Length: 227
Image (cartoon, rainbow, N blue to C red; front, side):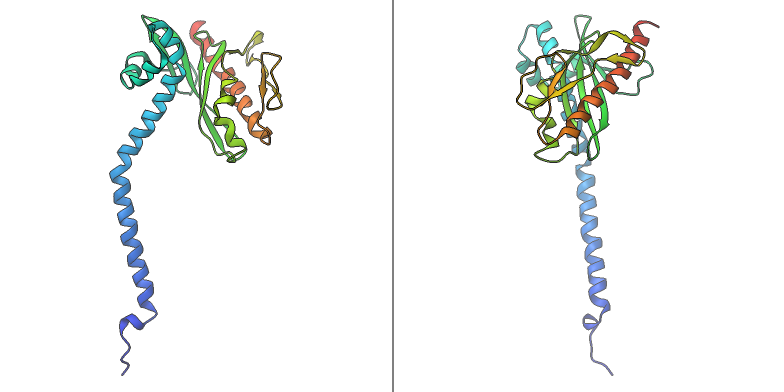
């Protein structure tokens, strides 16, 4: 008769690891469930703060206050002045800033394809959708140190106050073409953008996303103002 205990069998470590995995997975699941609401609330707050920030310039001018104080007043400022809306036939989240019964600007959630995956951004537009007032990329999967630099302030700031609408645009072709110049070179034309060194594809993806999405957005805007 063998005196080998169950712990000495080959089955014991397998069952032990299985039980340990079940326990740890259960603990992680409980922790996730417990923090799920907080994570969701944090993501929503972060998103809304980006929208408020992009629309803070026209709002602060209309309210005669500095953008800093407007942003510090979140969420009250967001709930008071920002409204989520829609445009006819456009399957995108659309927001507008309004003060004293005047729409001061729009913010549209747009998406496109980068080098390694989907990128998403929020773009602020003037009330007539002719001019970009601000751009923020809030989701991307680009290479750190290269393509991921599209989130850097200097790159995004280049798009501020660019009038993108063509004067002679027609259906489906309302937006001017962007032109890339080397990083560090001063732009000599309105639509010139410094591309990120070593990230040509990602840089081009940003402007392609803007042109494609703003074409769709302006088409929807025309449906609203010219029914």
